Every structure is written in structure tokens, then in C-alpha cells.
Image (cartoon, rainbow, N blue to C red):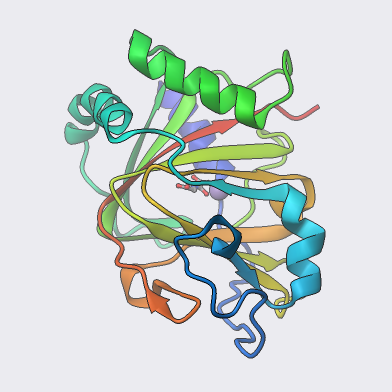
Length: 230
Ligand code: OGA
Ligand code: MN
């Protein structure tokens, strides 16, 4: 367990350069209701959103409220034993506690199988345990790229308890960005270039505005599956 958590820390080391600066002038999908699937991703240009479209997916309502409840019933006892960590300046994450889980009860195992078949090719090797990250209401994830040493081409995450915004910023061209609206109960998948060439971050409540609309950030628990590097 200790070792695995040490690996988790390596997964999300902060990006050397933080990239808050962005161009807000052009949005790829102005005016669409954020409740509609095609409006879950906006970006610095329509071309970028189209080019990376197949590598960035948000599936709303991927799990039900009952399944969210089942996941939380399994996860809360372990999480509650930990304290949120706020003040490690070198961490990519602020205001969080985390754990990992290799085995689930039947209802949750069914959900995890659904995530795996939605996100990963059959039979490909996955990072054994699933990563669980609990962000306090004031917590947030700074821009980073998951370790290429420990994780492969695909990252898939369920969002429990809160909507949030994931921002992707091109590592070597910070004016190229995409914002993903991650509704509670949704699954997101990042693949290939979106995973390797863009930093990702989860915005703090004060910055949590999607396409001009405030998205309140509450406590958020994410359940993240990754594959292994080839
Ligand atoms: C991470 C990460 C995203 C999420 O832990 O490396 O980026 O959805 N998490 O919590
Ligand atoms: Mn990450």
C-alpha cells in the first residue's frame, strides 16, 4: 500500500511550467447548453477541438446515483481515516486525500468493468489498482502530465459528488487549450496526445467557470483507471 501510494505521488508530479494564461477570445462551441454532450468540450479553436476530439471523451450519466452510492459506501470508510493534505508545495494536488483499490464488491466491480471496456482495448495490461482521489471543496489539481514511466496512453476517470472542469493546456504552446465539463456521474477518457502533450488540471471553485457559466465545485471523489506503458 505504502509503495503504491508512493507510485501514485509520482503519477501526478506538477508540470514544471504552470500554464494559467489562456486565450479566452474564441470558443469552439459558443452558445450551446452545457447539458448537451456536444458542449462538454470547448477550446481555443474549433480546429483543436476537432483534431483532439477522438482523444478526449466525456460520457455523461455513465453511472447512476445508486452506483455512485455503492462506490462511496466502499470508499468512504478508508478515506475517512485520512486527513486532507493541503500544504505540500511540491505536490500537484492541493486539498486532497487518496487511496487505491484492487478489489471491489460485486456492484462496484460491474461498474469498473464497464469503465474498462469503455476506455481500454480488451486484454491490454492495466495498472492493477484503481486510484481514488478525494478533493476537498477547496481542493484542486494543478497542471501536470501523468508519469510516462508508470502510466500508459489512456486515463479514464469517474466523477462522484461534484461537477468540475478539467483544463487541458498544450505543454509547448499554452495558447492551445481545451476545457472539459465533467458532470457528476460522468466518465472522462484522455488518450494519446491529449494525455501526453497536454497538461491536465481540475480547477478550484473560484475558477470553475465553463463557457461563461459558473460550475460550483463541491467535494469531488474521482475513481481513475490507467493502463501500463508499453
Ligand atoms: C491525477 C489526476 C484527475 C481526476 O490524479 O493525476 O489528474 O479526475 N486526477 O481526479
Ligand atoms: Mn493526472
